[in-house]
Amino acid sequence: MKKIIIVGCSVSGHTAAVNLKNKSDKFEVSIITEENYPFYDRRKLTELISGNINEEKELFVCEEEFYRKSNINFLKDSAVVSANISKKQLSLKDKQASLNFDYLVVASGQKPVVPEIPGSRKTGVFSFYSLQDAKDITAYFIDEQICLVGLNDVSLHLSEALAAKYQTGVKIISEVAPSQAQALPVGVEVIQSKPQEIIGEGQVQAVKLYSGKIIAASAVIFTDSRQANVGFLKNCGIETIDSRLAVDDLMRTSNKDIFACGSVASRRDAFQAEKTWEDCLNDGINLAENLIKITGD
Ligand SMILES: Cc1cc2nc3c(=O)[nH]c(=O)nc-3n(C[C@H](O)[C@H](O)[C@H](O)COP(=O)(O)OP(=O)(O)OC[C@H]3O[C@@H](n4cnc5c(N)ncnc54)[C@H](O)[C@@H]3O)c2cc1C
Image (tube, rainbow, N blue to C red; front, side, top):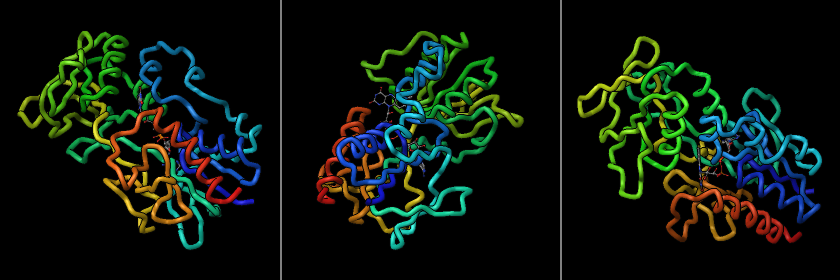
């Protein structure tokens, strides 16, 4: 049996694993996630924060038991930290043994970047992408105004959820002004600038902007720029495009036994805009079909 390891258990990785198993019995499929949960729907994280979703379980697409029943090895809380391409091995954080693969599928997505500005590591500074981020934000005591950095669909939904939940003002700091299509929720204001420093004794008290303005804040949440999670492949010599893994029409990277799908992957022959959830889901389906075809199964 050919061993396939999928790194990342979100929409593209989970879909690829399930389709591989459903359409062929010739693969041993393992799916590894650094998160502590099975596949959940990130798109609902703002609803979790606002309290519209009462149970965390409403977020989950499946339970862990699903993978056992589907004969998929599921490894949670296991960050892949490096890869040895010639030996076809992956190393996991805090684990001695490495994992062998015949084919590797990178479905590790993206992560928001918190810029290295003074004060960016203070308590009360968050990024917002994962369930853990949502839990950390809701567990934090927020009694004053909140600053979000970055103007996008996620920050607009999050600002609305936070303004309603904490009955507090929310400022969105953005270098770009809102477009006419971007209606601002009640209690939310956009300030056109960029954070220069986060001020506070140990924890956040204010944000200093490049415009010179200082805004009081009890929490600062970065939702802005994202970068592909490809750190574990550094020194492997795999071709990238703007930090994402370059893939061909079969979703194969520059290494013939390594494939990539979802938001971490970008077609090398065509401009590819930011992928939607739906795009990533289709990537997972197509990847499974391609792998089955390529391996002649
Ligand atoms: C709050 C929010 C709302 C959104 N709303 C929408 C929406 O309405 N519509 C829409 O189209 N899109 C939306 N998106 C974007 C959408 O969620 C992403 O496009 C989609 O999740 C990308 O899926 P993916 O499979 O590429 O991987 P991701 O969802 O990015 O997940 C990758 C997974 O891989 C794991 N991983 C990374 N590196 C490693 C490693 N080294 N070892 C082990 N595991 C690793 C990560 O922890 C993560 O669990 C939203 C995103 C957020 C955060």
